[in-house]
Image (cartoon, rainbow, N blue to C red):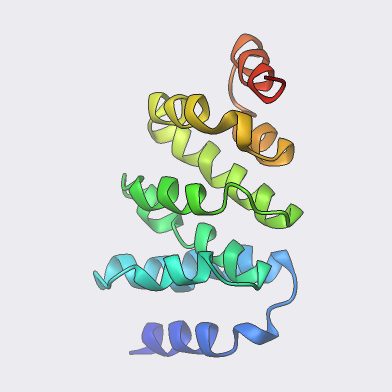
Length: 147
């Protein structure tokens, strides 16, 4: 019951969230954990990803944390695709961060995602997503930006 109250409070008062650290600290533990632990539908993450509010969009990608922790990568990659063209620096960094985390679970899936999308990804997002790749891989994917 307490977790549901926190979840509702976070979403109902999202207008008070105005900085990246509020999202980063709360979304994984409040939104993601609640959706995962109670097997709730994840539709609202996709609504958040399409919001005009950058903090809601960042919440969408950060709210895939508990899924990743438990080996579920689909939502992270789907939401990353929705946010591929995002112009907000903190959304770009957030997407890159969670793509990188997803790559720790399944590197080939990250490489496939980058193969498909590197050319269209903002440079910040791409660089953050590739942080753990080797030099040759980074060079290859950065080269796709120059096509």
